[in-house]
Length: 375
Image (tube, rainbow, N blue to C red; front, side, top):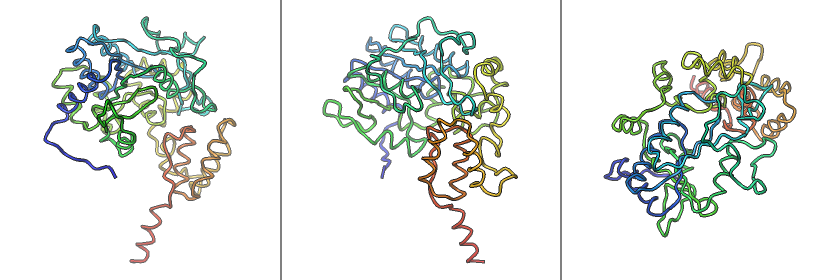
């Protein structure tokens, strides 16, 4: 069991000490950036240290193409914050991205050749536009899914040696993130680093902001007068919950709800997205509907979530992906609690299992039984 231990030191001081430690022990340092608030803070902290030491570090951005224009503006800002200390690693290469808004076009091939006329935007003149690794050694996690986002990251990282990859992950957001940070500590020249993860080829991932919370991030942005994506302001003003505010890809299963407000926030981005890929108008109309993509309310024509799941599975349009769901569901309990989650996966085309199913007996049944006994 993971235990939090509080010490007499603020998180900013600790983060700066961790970053200094990384500079002391690694010649090659790369910071992953997404255009979000956490990676903005991390990039500024690391670049500030690089500037003090007259060192150069890589800023790594894997461009998913279907992102807010505000995100791209933020990436350009970060890439040019300390140009003399920055190695630009802006990747605009082909890879598959899950499209949770359409079952007829379940994947988008970002930056697909021959479709430059409908790309969301033209490529950056100084971006990396072709794979930078040995293609004969290329790895793919799942050949049924094809070369995807995480495959691109894996191959980019595996092509490096003795490199520190810094990520703006904050473990306070969820227990799963705590486990990601602590599951495989790394030994750095005899020092046991619990806020890092060992990788291949002498590489390691580090999470200098792992113990920061939401308010720490925004305080640092305010104190340092940093620019940030204006999407945060728009979403906050619309009353979107703090845990749901995000600026990532617009079509995957954890952020498709952003399509509801996209025409208001960035109308030009929405117009381009409509031309780029199918399902966008559906996401815009039903992104927050409890009966549709969220699968929180059972459609009235069905007597149970089990019945609805069977219908969705039987009519799933992609024969090459249906077996993935069938195999996964065969290992699950057959009750309405589990079936509702299975319906959500089918509706969002989540064959990658990015929204894992809580496979257990319906907790509501125990509550109902308890009250029946009491009454």
